[in-house]
Length: 388
Image 1 (tube, rainbow, N blue to C red):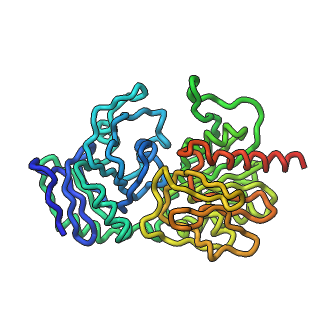
Image 2: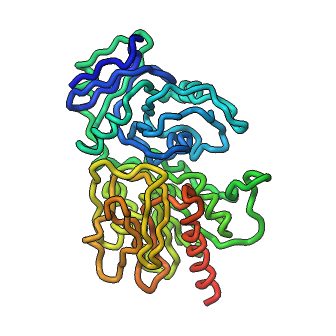
Image 3: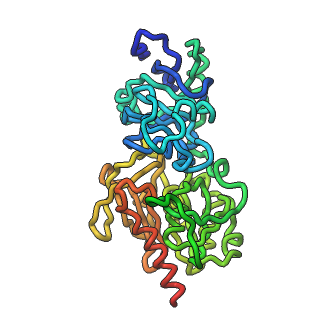
């Protein structure tokens, strides 16, 4: 049913779901309209990293935490050059930032980059609806005059095809290969450059976050990044000591049309291989497993995951709407991690080989360092291969 505006002010923004529900609010950032899937994120920090995470392509993010924008933005925290998420929804309008690192406020940052923000929304109600009914297709609009063509917005939301069957990795990947040597942020130097020889790693960019590349560099890797459409021949021609599969957006089955043959070509060698998020799903598909669309996905920085090999529980950052179906894992591939929220698969490994992947984001450090051992494991596998 339609929702009444939350204040006496004339609403300047509107969220319209494909089934006709209306959520009125106050717009900020860019004006106009956009259509996407609506997901909720439970993180208390990191809104800038979320908005610039390529894995959020085709999605509008509603934040369950109300204080969004209060620390401003800084270029140091961008995970890619420009925001990729289609828009954001919050309960309280962003305030003026209070943080020594801030160089710009969130409202101006969104406006310059063409992203719509909607404030004044009952995000608890919206989140409950997403949990109960699944991530809906929505049209969001920001008009300072408060004039909306509701019928046209509903039609746009209904006509949007959604993420199933959609390959978005091609849209967010790099245009050409490049090298990376920047390491993780550390006080007081900030970001530093890795020096000296390292393990030669080829990273496949399905929508790679910068901090993943920094973690690889900090683990002693000389990283060369290749586009998502790179072939096995392209990868092996660089004579790598290890191959990394990055995160990314969209339906893994669609991206797998060209990614799976490449991965299978790499698997035919003895190279260590490590995947994160979409890279995890790509590896599973290449090994013969299947992926499924989740009801509302996992999006947040407080997701508990159990490591089945050690019994330890890690607090992880997640961002995925598809998952590996653990029931389809072939012989010789074991499940290594599971979500303690719903039991869904969060990690796999090939038995007796240095090939593994996880669904969550160890580089995001929500634990804060519960999962950094995965980068160290990857480096150790390359060191063992080099020694042999």
